[in-house]
Image (cartoon, rainbow over all chains, first blue to last red):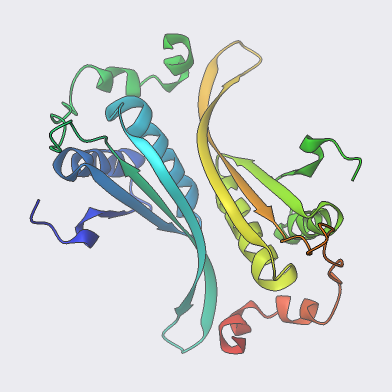
Length: 124
Length: 124
């Protein structure tokens, strides 16, 4: 793990949700932890991403902390605007020898069920 | 405080944001605590409400915990769908004798600044 700490961050925006689910799950595989960050209307998407990662992909993952804050953004005209932000800290438990657990196959069968979200509830 | 525990909950939906800011601030005045709950796209609004309550109205309020989860909703046709949810737990510190701090005047001068959100940053 020669990564810088802030390499663990996945910024959640307006791309399709599964883009971020896969990015965050890969990060969990590679580093054992991820921080999801979002601002404004993307906050809801960040919570969706965290829940899908935890329930469908990295099933031993835990949400360790959720922090909310206000950021002051400055526009090109120098005007400032407040925007809410969220940080969701997730991790996988390490093995007894302190190493990362084996990576999860992110493209296994579950991908089919992702296409039928209305059946999630029935399957559990 | 003869309220039932779940009286402390304010459900955040699609009404104008200030509706919920005032409801949550009143709850903080009356009971010293509030739980903001939201689902789906209203999650971003719940974070906005918490931040505005904390920064503009109940300035001694703290965000004690933020929990995210998945709820399974059943439609009229019996189909189930997953939806993300958030709960934001906020409280005011009690006085030394264990009583609630004096209520905050929710309609004081700050209301004027709420109408000029672009100036928030400059004022702080």
